Amino acid sequence: MVEPEGFVDRAVAEIREEVGDASAVIALSGGVDSSVAAALAYEAIGDRLTPVYVDTGLMREGETEGVRETFAYMDSLRIVDAEDRFLDALSGVTDPEAKRRAVGEGFIREFEREARESEADYLVQGTIYPDRIESEGGIKSHHNVGGLPERIDFEGIVEPVRELYKDEVREVARELDLEALVAERMPFPGPGLAVRVVGEVTAEKLHVARGATAVVEDELEAYDPWQALAAVVGKATGVKGDNRVHGWVVAVRSVESRDGMTARAQEIDWETLQRIQSRITGSLPSVSRVVYDVTHKPPATIEYE
Image (cartoon, rainbow, N blue to C red; front, side, top):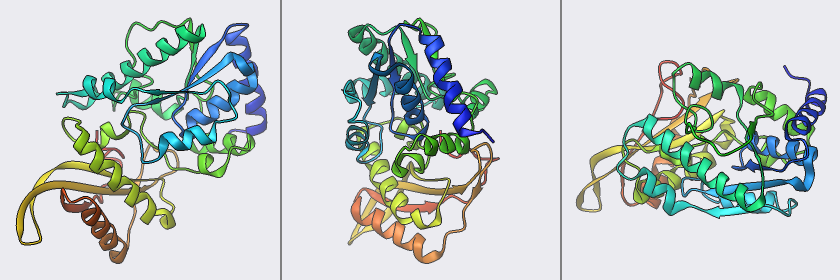
């Protein structure tokens, strides 16, 4: 395990050395990885850091408002509304790797645009060790590693937590006194809800995935999962009132893990599962069926795409 205090000192010194007298933008998502990277970079270079949160339209319910509130102390915080651009880039795309590449390129172009405005030469991002292992090992491309385009208009990319596992990042977050809402929150994929929609990403599917994920996170909080989520996996016949419908199938997944490299599906009691399906089908009329995924990692991955 990493020794948090010593790591913070080393990481801050490393960022100062890499960036020098230049400026940087930080890719801020609101998750623990990018939040820790942002806190380290802010300590290292202060006002020469521009935090950039890109609202892709692929985020969790309330994410944008949460980021605005949590990072309000950084006066240079920029929130970019890029939903239309990301949905356009994902239109017609069904291959999971192509989705990840589209999201990765979209992020980079947004950060390049913001960097030009703030005259920043460096990009800081919260890549962690499992991101690199899975991308380099061909398991799946992470938007901030294998999903990056070949041409990147930055002097360099700084990744202060690149050697850490998720549980180690949390230790550093506590050392930095980041609020528990950030330090303890469960992981969320960089490509966002795009990888919780099987097939083409549409506004309708995103609405279902976002609402269902909010229900799942709320209901399963007491189980303290590593990650809990809902994914839109297709359509199936159902009955709503006296009418036959062909609605969305939502898969619920909740897993235990130490570092995300392997994971075990959690045993959830029947009453909780029934409450989840009742809330999802009740609040999202287009959903006809809710299923629970009992597959471990491996053979499955935690996310669906």
